[in-house]
Length: 340
Image (cartoon, rainbow, N blue to C red; front, side, top):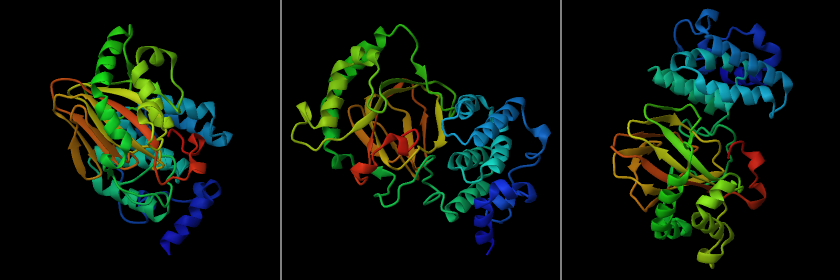
């Protein structure tokens, strides 16, 4: 009964939210929980948090998913200090109680603050309300029902992974020569989810668009990816796999990429280990693995995952995104899955 009432309130939120006593328990499925003392007080909100909430309100009022207010919010929220995150996302949840991203970020902030039970209740309530399929798989944009769902996939089930592994020496050489010729620092990963060390990237493809500098610096790597995407050249005779995103990811020792989830289960993610001397690990759901140079791993990044590097040298991987093989061709559209 309580769940049914909450679902009705969710649908009518803009009309009723000012009349509802929004206790923490409301967001935990009417079960006792606490997000922490003082998070609802105005004094608990930093200037940046207040500014971000103003942007979020303007974005909501604009009813435009491409609103400049939302874009500014996403850029500036990265600078939100850890100690402000629970308070901020708790207030943001009052504005958009069904937003997967806000629920996920509040849960992550609660976990970082040691409030793991409350985070679990928050996630369980979201699953009960149909926002996600399970508490460990929390796509931030869209969940597609009916796809083969598992955190880790067998790389041997994808023909292109052996081709990538065979071309590791070529890609490694091109990476080493190409990066050394770049006369500016690599772009910093700007998701705001890592601490300690550094996390950089060099984008080769984004939604099948290749930046001119990438084409110039990494011609053989990109030709290989095009062959795989078209079922041509070195990949002739095999079924094409649309690798629509590709980037080199460089993680320095001492870096921890906090638990997070990707935008959708409509895609899968592959890593080709370009350079790794040991000490770096990745956990997807409840299984932790590492990288071996020249080998590929495949996983569903809509499941919670995190990375940490306790080694002594940078870990470099080539990250590739491709459509989940169970996703029908007519549904393979970037606009459907925000950020995918």
